[in-house]
Amino acid sequence: MKILVTGGAGFIGSALVRQLVLQGNEVMTVDKLTYAGTLTSLAAISDRGNHQFVKADICDRPAIAHVFESFRPDTVMHLAAESHVDRSITSARDFLDTNVLGTFNMLECARGYWESLSAPAGARFRFLHVSTDEVYGSLGAEGAFTEQTSYDPSSPYSATKAASDHLAKAWHRTYGLPVIVSNCSNNYGPFQFPEKLIPLTILSAIDGKPLPVYGKGENVRDWLFVEDHVGALAIIAARGRVGETYNVGGRNERRNIDVVKEICLRLDHLFPQEKSRETLITFVNDRPGHDFRYSVDSTKLEEELGWRAATSFESGIDRTIRWYLESEWWWGPLRQTYDGRRLGQLEHAGP
Image 1 (cartoon, one colour):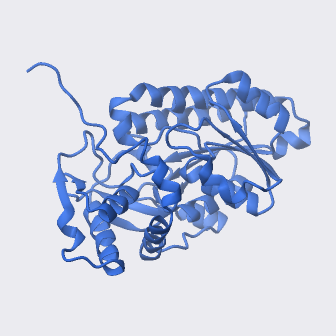
Image 2 (spheres, one colour; image 1 turned 120 degrees about the vertical axis):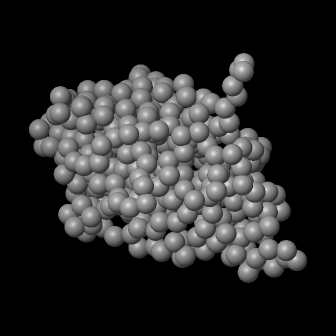
Image 3 (cartoon, helix red, strand yellow; image 1 turned 60 degrees about the vertical axis):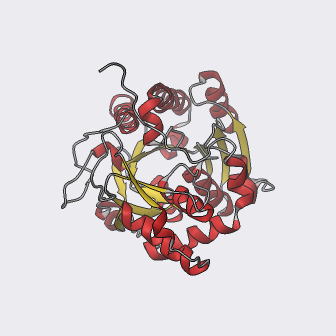
């Protein structure tokens, strides 16, 4: 199988590329290599003959068109996106450019390529658009997002992802492009850029720095181990029904404060100190538009395609912590571009 992966040097993308390459697929990775994308995440497959890398911006129409024509993929797995909510609050234009216009460009290049294929090749072609549960907005104390949940995005990030989802579905309905959409819950695991909650907490706790928690830490997320997620993506791309949406969740709901405390507890066990690392927890002003709770119902994916999340939160967080403890070679250089400072704070002018 020839698979084109956009955003393949990022967190989820690199996990997907590593899996696909090791399974024997021929993979082309396209990545702009912004602050959150690094080739060190692909070091484990750098000598594999079935992997190619192209540095390109998905907004660059000629570059992407050339990738399609030269590589001639059977499947596109589109993950390239700006993804950090806090950054979207102060740098919304970057999110519009990449998530909306970049996705439009990918869809148009894919459509032009697909329409040029023979009938058998065109019937095999798939375009998987990978998205987030944040497009659905916020839940109360009960219930879960299903594929029928109405969109209600709260942040510039989730709004741009919602827009890209609608574009992908429209390109299927209008042009017949064989598109499938997936919406996942919060991912965690090795190789995640340290601006996100779990890696930021791990590295700050190691250094004895304050551990900022938004509001009272009562916001709830459904945590999905990244290797489980990319396994689901491979199944959806291979066997999912064209035109359908599949939700991917870990069935591991946790309050943010409980996640932070769990990391502190495990680090205290591995490296005991005079004071528990929980004393480093600092409650800070909440993020603007912070959704209260996410919960993802993966029943459709589980029953239709037979996928199940295999990793418990306890097992996944242990593997993640141990990986960061052993992998300063990866995250150390990234601290030159991001030092752990808080992002996404609004500055209001005037009274």
